[in-house]
Length: 416
Image 1 (cartoon, rainbow, N blue to C red):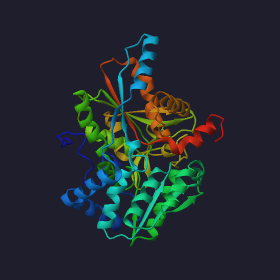
Image 2 (cartoon, rainbow, N blue to C red):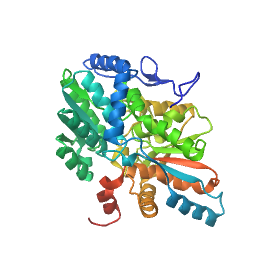
Image 3 (cartoon, rainbow, N blue to C red):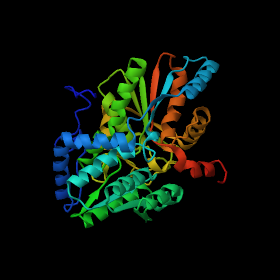
């Protein structure tokens, strides 16, 4: 079982206004405030409801396939130990993958979608809307909507529609309507803008199934709690397999749902180093990246205050990442708070480094990781050779890379 929060804990969550320190809150149109308050009321009712928990547990086990496996990445460990030996370093730590890529729909997104579709059902909603970047949340939303008989509209940036066409087809097969968004750069930020506009217009019957640990309160909290199954399982699994906690855990951070899900159960284990990986794109010197916590400043976007990429006038900038799921100019507010508190380190990884890690993992492990997850693996590749052989690193493999093969092929100058 997951440990309860302790006094002075990093796991105590937001205050009644949804604030993590100076981050979070609910900065929304007046039209939406009654819906947000109604959502909060229902969330507070169900999060400790045994019947709700039992239904979610049953679906997680028999529909989504949980628990996901904690896998000793023997091939990657061996490769990095060879690198360590060649460079005369520390010997190289053991690397484990938390295999969220094995879940139904191919990523961690199903964890949150199952929880929220049950919440929507409790609230008596009749229609589901969602936003998506890489398409994995869109697929998971369309999947649970099909499972429970809800009509579903998914907003997706036109740029992402083009680079994630297999997921677009999957959503349509599942019965969802995919609405391409041409505003801005046609990426995740723009899709979220359109989803919020839809929600304001259809307040009575529509449930907005947000895909990441961002947005107005209570979304960051509820998404985190639904995704915390990742870290709770990983914590129990590593204790069973190794008899102790890991030395380091690593996860990629776009909006940050897979990362906060992995990190949260470990936050009070002060001996565990926690590292979140941002999209460094083509480098932090220019504007072609999505490293909001390394190169941004606090501001308000999509209903919450958090670290954002913005210009001197406070206008939100369009970032860049090779990975559609990390191509977002902000981050969940709890990550911003954890950054400023110093409990979690946030590090950028470049497109080229992620691409190399994608190919390396595929070659030495027979696992094709999502480009998002490849960012986290890339940082492990950097730090593991200098660690000792008796140390342990867990990387959250948040999704599988089938969706990214066309992007990778193009980057490598190949055609499929």
